[in-house]
Amino acid sequence: MSKKEALRDRAGWKGFIVVIFAALMVISTIFSIQFGSANIPLKDIWTTFTGDIQSDFQNIIWNIRVPRTFVAILVGANLAVAGVLLQGIMKNPLADPYIIGVSSGAGLAGMIVLILYPHLPHILTPVAFIGATIVAFTVYALAWEKGIAPTRIILAGVAISAFLGSGISALMVFYSDRVQGTIDFMVGGLSARSWPQVEMILPYSIIGILLAIIGIRKMNLLMLGDRTAKSLGARVEWIRFSMTAVATLLAASAVSVVGLLGFVGLIVPHTARLIVGNDYRVLLPASIFLGAAILTASDTLGRIIFAPIEVPVGVIMGAIGAPFFLYLLRRKMV
Amino acid sequence: MSSLEAASISHSFSDKQVLKQIDLELKEGRIYSIIGPNGSGKSTLLHVLSRQLKPDHGQVYWKQADLYRLSPKKVAQELALLAQVNDVMDLTVEQLISYGRTPHKSMFQRLDEEDQLIIDEAIQLTKLEVLRKRNVSQLSGGERQRAWIALCLAQQPKVLFLDEPTTYLDISHQLDVLEIVTQLQKTQNVTIVMVLHDLNHAAVYSDEVIVVKEGRIYGQGTPKEMMNPGMFKDVFNVQADIYEDQDNELLRIVMKPLKD
View 1 (cartoon, each protein chain N blue to C red):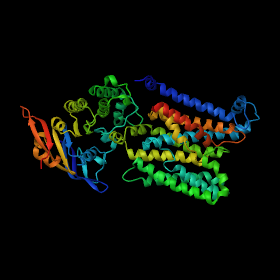
View 2: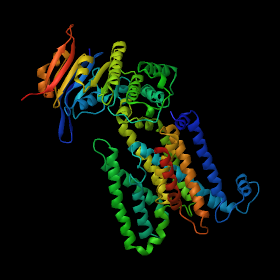
View 3: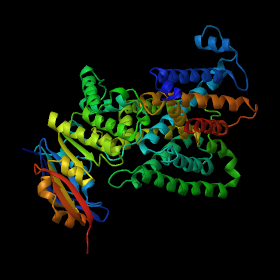
View 4: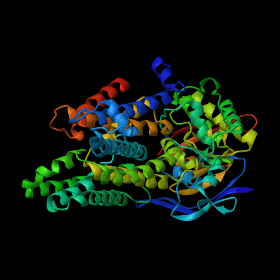
């Protein structure tokens, strides 16, 4: 046994990593509230929360920074959990919310609202959510034949996504003058997200993450392989279906609020997996904290790096997340 | 007493009928080997019997009850399957084996001392004591197979199904596996049903062989009854010479290509 592996297997090590990820989430939360177009001193944040003294920044903190950070945390956690569930369900390292059609469903529905009904911005989120859910379940139904084979779901998902993608492209061609207003949604951004978005996503986050926690043991059984899981009394098809549904709700609620934010659902679970291993008892909390931390940190960075221009969080995620992920991959796989 | 029974089972994959009207009776505490050429349906039969695959037609009865109407968890307390292919897991040997207790626990129940004793026993029987804290991904093929068998043992099954348990193993590890299985039957009266590729192993290690040909049962009986030149010619398309030892116990089959 090599030293590195000995360290990785040592009791408590994995729990420690989870605590580190949680700490990262807290730190990026503080940064996210602190930094932006105006930098707020820590003591003002403190007094705002304790309510002792009226701060000049109270309005910014309560109505802009806190809800936006809240949305970032929830979206990051949702997408990470959706990804970590789907990778386990599909037994495929490339599985993420895109693969089951959630993103293309939300994408086309969102684009229809943004381009054809730009005067109704308030219906964007619910319509995108409905689009995401419908498409995900369509993919699932198409892949069904005496049960679900993960490869069939992935292929059906890719085909449906390509089909809907051509719809999105067509809209952009026919209404090229209106494309400008859709960019934030297409790449995924948190700008101007506030309390209504928190209210939209929070119930799904709570329910979805709770259900994922309840499913931890079942997910671990699936990791042993379908036959062994069945031999141990697991209802494999039901686990696949119910956990896909949970992942769909989590991803759909996230995507409908921030737009087509890719990559979080793919790289966060993988990064967590490379560091803490496959056991969902550790992997799930690690993904939740890491997803929230990375998205919050990326959004903060996007706000300050080219200020006053705000870089959408999706762009930051891709630009920094991908190289970091490749670095991890190279180091571990050899 | 027959504990596991199949009544006119048929099953198809897409257009191909893999099992055709199979009837079968398996008695408690015996070792059964299912043999047959590739594509004869022997693995499918094993999966149907072990509640992995509901057949298109026909019933499987476990102690007179319809196997596919019993709850999966209840079945898992009595039937266990060692799958043919098992993924490499990022778990310690002991963690892997502890999953065998799943069917005996409710959803949020933790493992207690009794479970630990059962896990220890499974580790002892498969001689994994020194490897128990090792990561499964670091084991050799033979050790890994023993760890997966131990997982099944921790399940404390009444029937253990094994799908080609010796494939890809060195000969010494093949024999290890077969010895563990025999010991299990002798000491705990566990019924063993396995698909075996090696016909000599099937001859030596089973109480009965079930010969499958083109989705039908060609015959079922003791190795001595079944393993004869006629069967080898009909089913496997080979010429076989059977040698017996002085006690008239079946020992060795030598197979040659069939002469025209």
